[in-house]
Image (cartoon, rainbow, N blue to C red; front, side):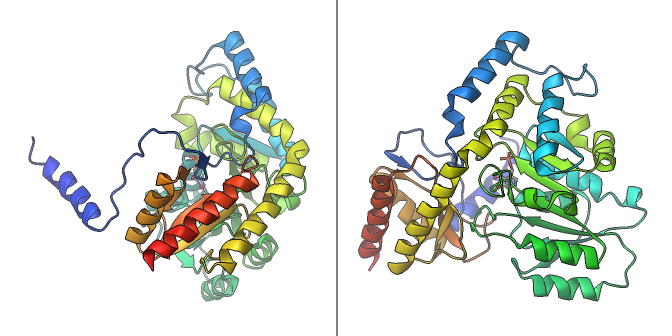
Length: 383
Ligand SMILES: Cc1ncc(COP(=O)(O)O)c(C=O)c1O
């Protein structure tokens, strides 16, 4: 083995010692699965499957090139048109993944050469890794405000009030690891007052929240400069969108590396996501029932003494703090046929390890009862 391999190996050995080494889970069937982000069960929906098959029959599997290189396709425009219409934005642009959208859109927006000055970025501390990576790639030292603490954000904005540097506020609307919600009306007011651009990641809200289910930014239209969301969670597929102004769309097409230098999303995936997008309003009774089920599940867990953090949605963390306890709880539930995700640093902060329970519309009362009983048994074992 070349000597350079030792550095990589040492890195992983250190993670193992701290109970932080990540490994791909074994392929196996579980009776109950609380680890998936397929919140509306759309990954198995016949309308999506049919749309994908019909498109593959017509146009094949791959999209063959970047949209700027090959001739552009009507399916991309149709989906972007629907997104802009329902998000009340002037335009939309689609990407192959949420991670790709965040890193390429944000690093384009934060380009100091284009802006003429280094931007000031105010970011919620619990934002998704892709947003942090985008700032790193742009060599930005973020002003990170305490999670959803808008007094702290106001304090930071006030501190930099006289700066002429362009300002940006970055947040998720539903936080993926905590299941709580940002207060968008407060963020809009702050963005207006301090002349900051507002960027909202709707990965975990798209399909479930907002007037028609298109996410929390749906209710605010153009008051939010960029509303990013993914197709990879409640919409059951893969890919992402940004809803924005015409000016920004034109800029993104010319500056987002992940758009310019990457093959366009597969046409069958886009066709399936068009079908998913159209189904969203009709699925809102199920989405509402999911939130009510989550409320009951959370209340029971809390009454049993589990720490569910700030959750107010279908994502419920059970915070054990130490990675070791979290992994043991996960293994205990797995032996009972229940799959949950164990989330450890760096996905969450130190001393914040947790099981992440992601409820979806197909979870029965029986499944939730099995989960609660499993957790209660685990705790008895620990005492
Ligand atoms: C808040 C948030 N943004 C972006 C992403 C990345 O999305 P994708 O999985 O489509 O790359 C995720 C995925 O976990 C996420 O939770």
